[in-house]
Length: 66
Image (spheres, rainbow, N blue to C red):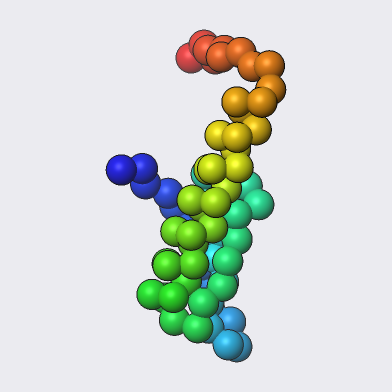
């Protein structure tokens, strides 16, 4: 099971959040539980999209030295 960090803010109509590990993944919810559920769905969709893109592209894996 992967873990992701969500930074959230209280808004007039609930909460908004963004995923630190995947730029551009954002969502909203009226409650923190709804925000959590929406973020799980949004992250899942983003990961599936990234996987599809990776399968269709030329790629390489590199290591960054310490």
